[in-house]
Structure formats: C-alpha cells, structure tokens
Image (cartoon, rainbow, N blue to C red; front, side):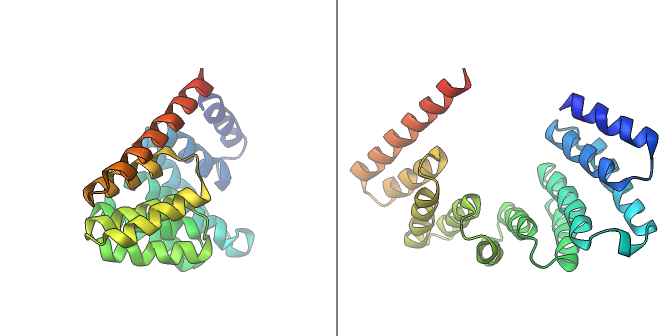
Length: 203
C-alpha cells in the first residue's frame, strides 16, 4: 500500500490537478486507517472535479469519490456526515450500489434499523448477490426481533457464499436464541471449520 501511495505522489508531482491520483491516494490512506489524510485527498479530488469541465469527468466517477469519502467517515463513526456524502453520490448516480449499501450501514450503526433495511433492499435490487448486504439486512432484522426474516437473510448469504464463516456464526447465534441448540451447534462447527481453513491458507 505504501508503494501505491508513492506512485500516486509521483503522478501528482507531474500533474497536481489530476483528479484520479488524489482519489486513489485517499483510498490507499483509508485502508491504512490514516483517515484524516484520506479525507483531505478526497476533498482535493472533489475540488478539482468541480473546477474542471463536467464533460471531462464521468458523473459516476465523481460519485465514487463522494462514496469513498463517506466510507472513511463511516470508519470514523461519523455516520450522519457519511450519509450526507452517500446522498451526494446517489444524486449523481442513483444506481451506485456501493452508496446504497454504505448508507444502510451508517443507518444500522445509528440503530435506525427499519431505514437500514429499506436501503439494503435497494442495494440488493441492483446487486442481488451482494452477500454483505444480506448479512447486514439480517442483522437489522434480528435487532428488530424479526427472527424469521433475519434467518432468511443469513441463509441467503450462505447460499451465495457458503464459505463465509460470519454468516454461519450469525445464523448459529440466532438459532440458539430461538432454542434450536442442535442446529445452532452445527452452524458454529461449520463457522469454526471455515475459520481454521482460512487461517491455514494465510500461512
């Protein structure tokens, strides 16, 4: 990641008004949890995007910058501010699935579960196989004590990605809460096996 940032810096030395390296550098800094620096990069990218002719920049790309900024604000737990950025992204590109999902995640963290579910539904209309949307939608249902609907979401996530340990774990917790101990135990066992397999692959 540090090598990537070096490349982006070199590109910006050549052309400081090149929008994409600012956006890409912001993403890289965000992954390194250098959030304040990342936000400054996104702000610079957005300022340059506003300065340039709209014909030169794809609105979908500008939407991605707003989305990236919102994602970092989510990471800082600045959820209300993040939602404002996702709304800006969606105004530019109403079919930008990432912003629907990220806005839903911010609402989930604000404990606005019913709203979060609505936004996850929109995200899933655009991308029905987005497994994290199914997982977080299920988590929102579980917080509303709508356990059967939550279970359906976790099962859908497992159907899409059978090797996702967290989906098995959440399904297990819910089944345990519903008094289905044996089924819950099987889910926890499966989750543990998947985690062990993942750990071995990382070695």
